[in-house]
Length: 205
Image (cartoon, rainbow, N blue to C red; front, top):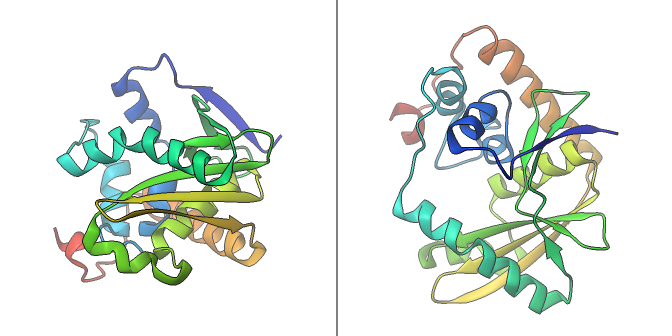
């Protein structure tokens, strides 16, 4: 087995937030690689090393959470594939700093599903089969942790359309991502040495 499974169905929010601080999650992966326009390695460093575990929330986060079920339903309607919740956090055995909270597993297929809610002004980033880079890294991270070779990503573009993509395992990408996360965790989080400032607005904030 490539991972250990940690039950989360009965876990309270504070305990779950504390558990997330013990590794790099899928939503952190793009930022660690410097590919997330809304986050940065410095932000993830502070998230993992700060003492507090306060739950952060915003209207955008609430909408994304509430529409996760809707995105999963639309995906099933569009593809004919059934999906289910996992109710576990997955931790890589080989790379224990890599953890994964996944939205859905695809029934009858070795695949997972990530659900996204996208604001209308970001619709162009999904044109012509494209996927924002930090979302690609998120799905790649989940494949690396679980060993599943396929990951779907479903996007509800508010007020415009529903779309989905299929990503397949890429050896080079998985190796590069794992190396980046290994460096970040062992050379920054564990040592307490902040990553270099990259000049991004997320970093400076």
